Amino acid sequence: MDAIDRQIITATQGGLPLTARPYHQVAEQLGLVPEEVIQRCQRMLEAGIIRRVALVPNHYKLGYTANGMSVWNIPDTVVRAMGVKIGALSFVSHCYRRPRHLPDWPYNFFVMVHGRNRAEVETKVDRLAAVLGPYDLEHDILYSTRILKKTGFRLHHQRIE
Image (tube, rainbow, N blue to C red; front, top):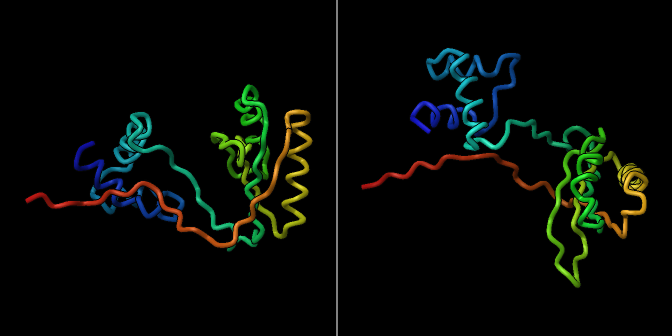
């Protein structure tokens, strides 16, 4: 990562500009050409310096005030396949595998769904259960009670003397 990469990260770490051509605006701000910003971002993605570029919506502002993390106990042997299948559903914002912590926590598969109310979330969780079929050994829904601050990668500048 060189000084220009750091400038690009610093300029975008609070989010890309909400314009039709955000990379062009970043390039203009930094005195670069848009193609260089795009190429550098792509290279940083490929190198793992940047993990991803993604939209992070505020579901509450969009009217989705019932946000439920559904937690599932499914066989470890099917987590990857079910993750691909469940993650492709339009109403799933993200899903991932986590280790169980037995005997108190049997869940190893987490799926976030959003709804305008709890009944809508529960209907979506019922659809998940239907997709998982016999692999659904047990599940629960953990509802959000507040918004946590969501941030991406941040560079912190430290002076070395």
